[in-house]
Amino acid sequence: MVAFSILLIFPFVSLVYILTSESANLIKNSLEISASQTIEQYASHVTTLMKQLEDIGNQVLGSSITQTWLADLRNSEDLEREELLAKRRVRDFLSSYAVNNSNGISISLFTIAKGGLWKQDRTYEQQPWFLDYKEQNVKWTGSHLDEDQPDESMRNRNVNGYLLPLVELQTLISVGIVKVNYPTSVLRDPLERIHFGETGRVFLLDIDGRSVLGQQFTGVAAILQEGISKLAKVRQTNQAGKRVRESGVFAVRNQGKPYLVFYEELPDQNWTIMGVVPERELYAKLNRIKETMLLVSGILLVIVLVVAFGLSKSVTNPLTRMARSMKLVKRGEFDEAIKQMPNTQRGHSEIGYVTGAFGQMTHRLKYLIETEYETNLRRKNAEYKALLLQINPHFYNNTLEIISGLAAMKRNDLVMDATESLGQMMRYSLDLSSDQVWVPEELDYIRDYLFILKLRYDDRLQVRIEEAPGARELKMPKFILQPLVENAVKYSLENGEKAIVELGAEARDGWLYLTISDNGIGMNGELAADLQRGLSGADTTAILHTEGNSIGLRNVLARCRVQYGDAFEVHIASSPDSGTTITMRLPASRS
Image 1 (cartoon, rainbow, N blue to C red):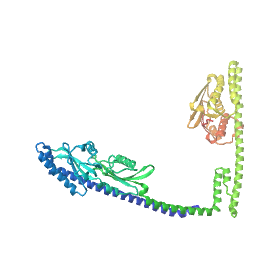
Image 2: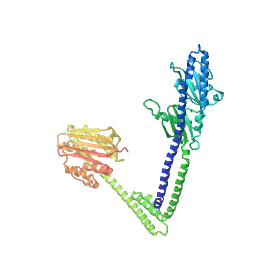
Image 3: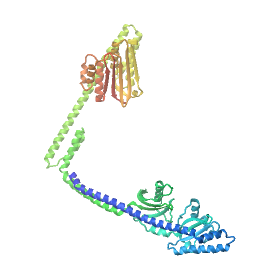
Image 4: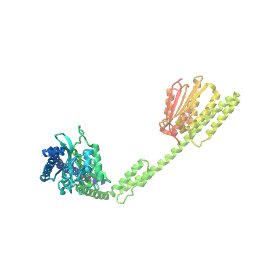
């Protein structure tokens, strides 16, 4: 019922989601394009005004009236009257621009020798706009007050200006600067009429992030600074090294809130128009519509699911719980499966019968498995102990024969040494507190055993033991090396005058490798295959009654098989008269 309900509501929810998502993307793109176009229109307005200011500045500079005044100024000592008349004509000429221009443009001329044309002093040299022009060649000034104006009303209003060198064209000597002023309100008023969302604002910034129009950055200073930093990193340049006019939008986060930053660059002025608006405000209406549609869909889905659950609880819920119990039984978690077994209600006899039968089967299966597991565990432990006890009589019989031989040879001193070694071996053998021993302990036991063999065979026996450092930290089954070493010595002496035996222990890739090599008579392929087959799961109790050759090797392989199961591997490399190499791989154990 839940699946049916989901399939019933899914097409509607999907349709709502797709429509709202696609509509949102289209509307977002439309809003972003609209905002970018608004900024672009303002940028065109700024560009037009700046071009007009450049033309006015060039006209003033190239005017014959201006050039005549500059020439008279250069010869002012001899022609003071002419210089004063030329200055008056320049003032009238510049005043006519202010009168005839609808944007309230005014023009000032500043000479190095005489100072400003209107105020006639050199205080302008301390003004920030002049210092920026002199030190950094900033031709487009920020908003400021300029006292060097034709009348008082102009001196009390904020202006921006365009600066260019005042050059006497006849001599091409720069004698000052031309400053074309325009009211800050000409650019600021239309900029402040641009609104994005409820609180979104647009700013005109210079290359250092300062306001060109004297706007306040309340609440958005960090965002604007981050925007300027991003543009400085990604700004492209052409081959001439000039800035390229770019525009776009990017997202920033400030105090955990997302903002959209629209920008358009004015490369000729090194200005950037930058609009900042909280993302949620720009998409406020769109988000409300989307959230409402999704909320309605969610409520509808919840209602359908509640109804479906109520209908299915009395029918499908017991079957669902029983299926969950079956999965737990499959994994062997019987106790948890019994807990998950449903309690069926009246009126559902079929479900009740199936549930009851399955519950009884689960209890019975749990009992049988636990009984079989305990039986196998006891049998496995008994087999292991029997195999371990089988080695001891076999080994001690061989060792006593060695000591008996030494006594017959009246080598009493060697008998004492052999007896002492045998005593150490017996102490080691009688310690049955654990079936696992450290690798160095087992190797020390082998060294005591080899000492006894060395007393018997003298130079006919050569043994080399290599113990890798990593193997010293691992554990291994007790008494698995002595039968192999015993066989190696025995069959090597049968094959020649000397027995050369090599024993190695190495830890590698999470495994313990034990290797025994000899120069003995070897074994044929049938015997090696028979030993390998005996490792693949044959009844280990049969080894207790094994007769003939390789009893020691069969015993060791069976013990390892009982203890490690399929994790134990052995490789036997042997051929007649070419010796035998046995490599056993055991899981690395440190406890």
